[in-house]
Length: 302
Length: 42
Image 1 (cartoon, chains in turn green, blue):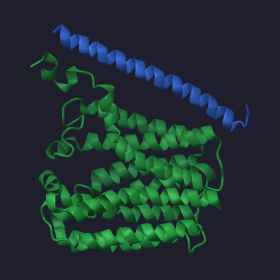
Image 2 (cartoon, chains in turn cyan, red; image 1 turned 180 degrees about the vertical axis):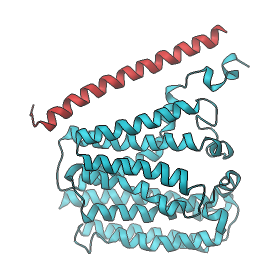
Image 3 (cartoon, rainbow over the protein chains, first blue to last red; image 1 turned 120 degrees about the vertical axis):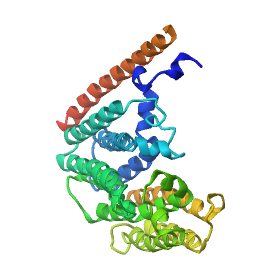
Image 4 (cartoon, helix red, strand yellow; image 1 turned 30 degrees about the horizontal axis):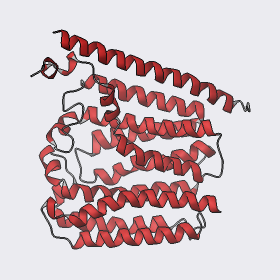
């Protein structure tokens, strides 16, 4: 065995790629996209460099949340197959570096947001980081099966921040976008947690399928999908978006409800047989991307 | 262990180089943000 593989994490400085991995780049892409949409549908157009800075700040704050989440949950991550290869549980980085990186990114993103756009957007960015790290990661996630329901608010901030960065104030449409992501989060995560239930159970995280069982989780997915679909279509009848968005949102939401209905009827307990759950999880990611993209297209057409 | 020391130096250099590039990019970004905020057009 080469000498490098036998060293402790403290003996070897972490590779820069591990710092990138710490920011959860895949999660960041959806956060950045929804933040960008909030910025683009706002009635005020910022200069390009300020728009770029606002989106950069949202991305950096999301990266900071990922780093602080992995710092706090490194022992839990080591127990789950899905997360065991992350830099901290795999021993490629020491915890202190992850903490410093996360805290540094948080301060930097908030400061830059305040300087580049306005301090209300910076305040919202601070609230989203604190909500994700303290309310979701530290408080809710290890304690209650409702962790995703309330914690979903953390992921719902980006379009609101994007809008406020452009306009400097709140409005009905970004609050509706917040509601859409807030209501979308439980069906999205519960679909995933159904087919990785054993991982969560092994790590002792009280996700809904672990504490309430498969059938109850499947019913809850369908139950939350209904208000989510209503919130997704709502901007059209409320006059906040046009027919292009309204019809697209109705079609996209109808497909979501059909897939959620299939999950509700499914009785599989083996992850390999959970085709309906995997389809819903994959579609839920596409759904949010498509919904927000159509909203931007609709705003531009108007 | 020369192999380990080489690896430590390589990683430190790589991280220092990336930090320097990021700091440089930040200075340039801050310059353009100031220009945009003060309303100076190019």
